[in-house]
Amino acid sequence: MTAIRTPTILITRPAQQAAALAGELQRRGFETFSEPMLEIRPVSHQLPKDVQADALIFTSARAAAHWQDIPPELLQKPVYTVGEKTAAALKKKGFRNIAATAASATALEAVFKRESAQNTLPENMLHICGRDRAHHFDVKNTKITTFTVYSAVRAENFTKNLQSLLHNEKIACVLFYSVRTAENFIRLSKNYELTEKYGQITAICISTRTAQAIKDVQWGNILTAEKPDHAHMLHCIEQQFR
Image (cartoon, rainbow, N blue to C red; front, side, top):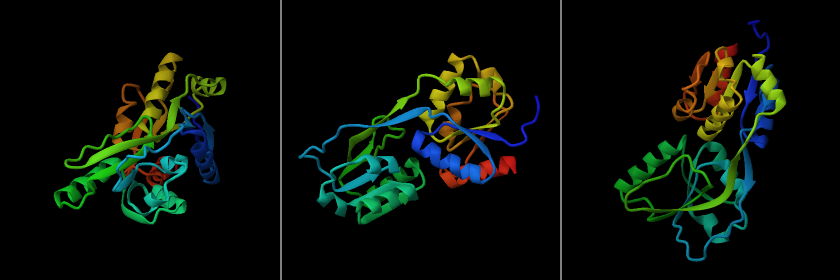
């Protein structure tokens, strides 16, 4: 196989995030190709009048973006978030009280359990989220109610352009920012009988769970970000190709 001089990086994130990431990578000198594995769609939603919410949970900035007609009284509630970007998005929405920000849902659950042990965790929490959740919180003595504001729908095919790039081994690296994205990419790869072409490709995953989702395919290399965030994904790319 002829070496790829300028690495072409395949971005599998939803369209809006893919466009921003592509621009960032191109400014760093990489070629990119975007093929979203999930399409984000708003879900019609109305918060039940009898819902109890002493505090709110947001595990993605996407949930913050899609929640419409937020009751003003909830803007004052303590908010627990995953990621600094999520916290920043919530502040722009008018939320005043960011109680805790963790690097991952697993880390946030550890915060819940610690506060629960200290009897400081609110009894009723509202998790604003997508229809398919990667993490289900389980905390004693606290009721966590989910409120769905968007869905992430799987892509059902690879475009002709992507099929050609993969078949002709023109992709040097694939980025996976979520378990569902990774699972769908593998599913479609098998449908198109392309997995045998991945032996020279580096897969970069945001978490160990995401990496686990692609391990039944033979890759050139699988790298996992040291921390599950965008900055550490970029660091992996730079370490691999610079």
